[in-house]
Length: 96
Ligand SMILES: [Zn+2]
Image (cartoon, rainbow, N blue to C red; front, side, top):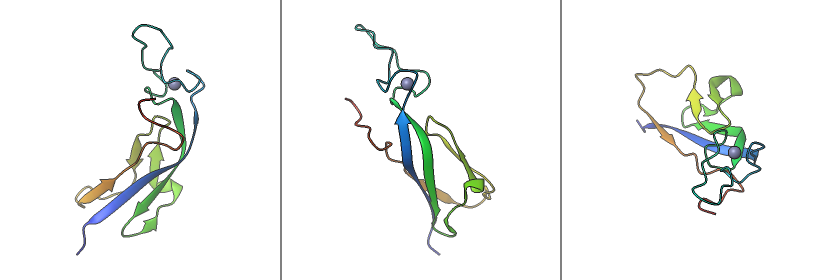
């Protein structure tokens, strides 16, 4: 049997209101990563989770945070699940 995979995609994000999308506090010398978006500059507002077994999962099967962490709900911990992704959110170019 093929290994079960769960693929996570960020489908929407918005500029972080705390840092104005900069990702840090804007200090000229040693800028500090924004606490709210963890330096990403964007907050995740929507994700899609696709299970190789069950297809696209309903919103009730997972939880996610604006920082991009995703928690899967009601998954058997004995199942070997490979989690794929997510990529950086849309509109984000790391390092710029
Ligand atoms: Zn921020």
